[in-house]
Length: 388
Ligand code: ZN
Image (cartoon, rainbow, N blue to C red; front, top):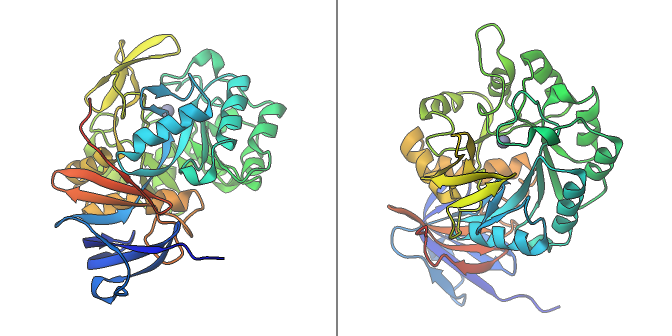
């Protein structure tokens, strides 16, 4: 079998997912990283893509909560072409892998969405699906349609637990499912996150013991932190083996609260919770018959309810640095290394290391812009980061 030709990418600054290096390069063969090391140690006969002065090379972003992009809402069009359009829209902003996210909908729509995900080629950056609902608390629906919130039926379990090589993440309210349901899902390989929930601290601890490892948009749409009922937020932040999603648009959660959350033991992940305006031309869209629109990096309904975001992942990283005061390398790890580990893919995604998939971004830090992305070693130009 002939070997794919190798090529190298060299940068002033390389962040490998854990450590920042100066004047390093990666050698890519086909879809994989073959070597990482000092620029001067590259073999002389390899073509080298030299990034512009000041540019960073970093792992591609992994977004576990993407409702839409490129003017498409996944719920409206759960088809392979819509999924590709969403993935393409987000790729411009550094996202090389994502979970299209279906918010609470009918069993038929859930089946259609899952079938569509399974028919998209696995190397396209679409890792699987995130079902956000429908097993949620009617007390914390957010913009989910309360009429479609329900408890799991046998058919739901059969859909969620069917054998597949694609990832499934389910956001649910633990107090709305039977004891053992989370264990059954996790044993079938499904990742389970708490969200849209009124679970108490004790109920959350029980869910963690059953295998729950995630918290969806921590702080939003869940029982608040309180002195005598610490609820899911305290249970999350004191746990070293869980990951929580943060929407860093400056609106969903006050930056002071997120700075506090970063002092906890849990692992932060940047998510966009993106809606159709990201990478699209329209600023308004329909959500279950209600009009919603982008205002800055946030989306809301006309009644003022938050309805996801118009946030691109590179903007989330930028906000993380500016609003939360963390180093760029940490913000980048919240968008790559941490979600890779949450999804159980930390052995092949989220780092620039030998044997890892060549999912990478070229990043200009000031002003922060994605210059190019590589998905499985294939380079895509970021024509423009400007939003229409
Ligand atoms: Zn939500």
